[in-house]
Length: 170
Image (cartoon, rainbow, N blue to C red; front, side, top):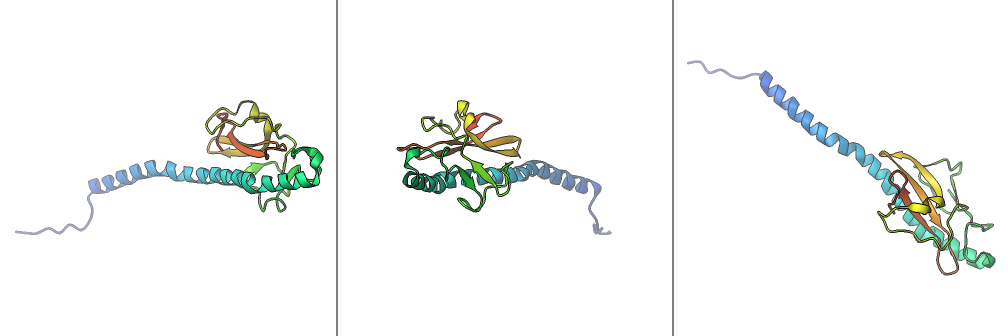
């Protein structure tokens, strides 16, 4: 009786391995592609939060001391009507387009301090008029940075919204 030793894979074994690898690739690849888009959007969230927590309160406080006649409104200020890369912030995310060099966000389009910003997920509505910066296409969507100006009682506030779906995202 002869014992045969298998020295190679059969064709059917190779087909099954390739089929399984293809299924795994087909399900995993879209997720890996969207990770990059998620990172870009997270960067926008982080930047918006930084503006609201540190940059705008500092500018607003300085404005009230140096230009009291502005009543806390940044958009008409002589010294505080823009956020410039390298001055008020170290960097403005490259996801925002058309801001010049150095990148600069003008606060001239900020909405009046009486504007009410909806909750996350709610329609942006008329607040789209407060757009101060816009992104290129990220994962099939365009995001915009909007601004509500300050008053004596309330600091200015930035909000991020999805222009494609028309909802507040941050």
